[in-house]
Length: 355
Image (cartoon, rainbow, N blue to C red; front, top):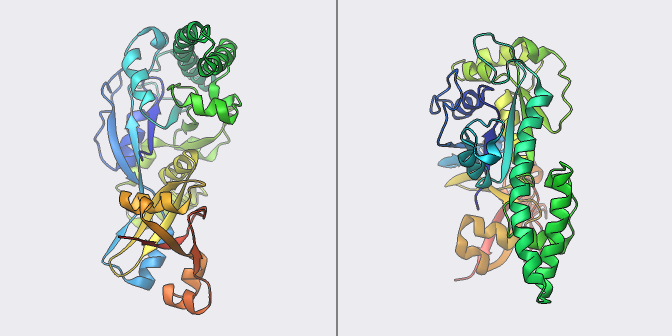
């Protein structure tokens, strides 16, 4: 299962700078002109998880392996993208491939870095991109609605349901309502999977601020949002641990902005982490929230889902408190769960599977 997020925004808002900071390198070109990113850069980023280090202290594994998610640095969008303006067609096709959107919004002022509209206006910038995504969705919805309308004339019930769903989608998009704000019932949700609408994808806003603005309250009407100085986060990659700690203390921050961004991105995708630990490795695994035990077993190895017998589960807190599996077992805190068990974040688990 792919857990990918696309970093989007207008040109020159700091998308590639943020991407480079996430990857702790200079993989993506970051320049003061529109469309310096054409093909999307792709990077795999580890999800910070302090629990792994604590498991490793108990089990002394050969390896510690965090879970990870993918970030795509996608070309900047301009007005008219839904009609192919700028790199519009490429931009929109790349967004269709990701599960969620990280929308970078420029807050910082810098006379040496031009803004495509000439001045800084975060609300206008968000509305520009939202409108382009809505118009792209509307174009696709109108086309598919006409097809469904034609097919439904035969009396086919399924096409009738699709027609009604697409009529609802068109109606909302014409009112400039993104589909993530529309309520769909279970039947509609099932049909929605046949289409790749852009505005149904969840969005996290990253407010790219100057270093000075880190201490300021930013009036921003869209949620959820994370405030980060992409330039400062890039510099932090070269700092010692002591220097990073001093920086965080100066700005009253508990952790670097990039760690907050990765964790918020993980939450945006509605994911949880379960853990495995032993002498070979302490490892974090990603699974969707509400996943059942066989699905989680299948993350480790595809065959495990079908061959699942049971899951032996210890909560992370109990695993740490009683110093590992043996201690938790002795205190009656290892649970044996079946196929209907819904995984919880932080479960330390051992799956039993058949041959």
